[in-house]
Length: 271
Image 1 (cartoon, rainbow, N blue to C red):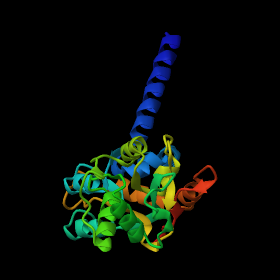
Image 2 (cartoon, rainbow, N blue to C red):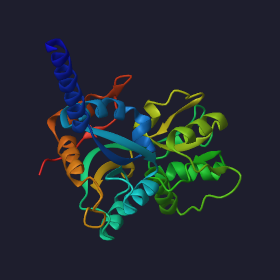
Image 3 (cartoon, one colour):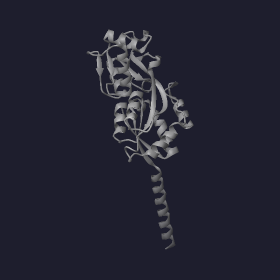
Image 4 (cartoon, rainbow, N blue to C red):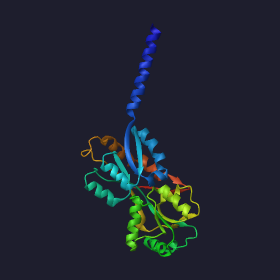
């Protein structure tokens, strides 16, 4: 009888332990850009986030426009995107509580190794795009209302060019898929540096233009407004933000490299 009682107690304690562990694992949904997901950084950050905070961060990988739309619908608890004007408009509409800068990298122009348009000779990004348009060299656009697409549109506008014709192909896809299309067509494309460095199917493509300050690419964290959507995990979103601006996050982000090259630079400031 005593053995049976001990076995029952042991089973009960084990069940309680499992239930407590499950309770500590708290889900949080975050919409993130495909460029962030394609970089590989998420695989480094998420396990440490779960270990330190108990948050099981579930990523919805979409373009910036779609990420903000998910937040505006209350379908996620937070978003991590990279299109400041769109972010500020989203906040002004009452969809989020605030905007917190976390890290940055830059955009680059990738193209055929031979660079038939001579984009590498340009002094500015608009000059590189102008050269591509004049040569009618194949150019792949994400065409998906992402942060990268928004940057590309701003550059074309600044160059005074409305890209049209057989040479310009909008694919309506994420960064990885768009890079694959560019590799298959041996075409030019605007990409973020992190996605390019982590991209395996480079084929005959190479980085042909970089360094213009206008290509600065800031990523920001925006919690969804709990007053608009009481069902969101506001407490979890705050804990995640605190982790994202911590020294632990800073070290992991700054130390993440591919082939010796840094993909992101941490620039968050604790408040």
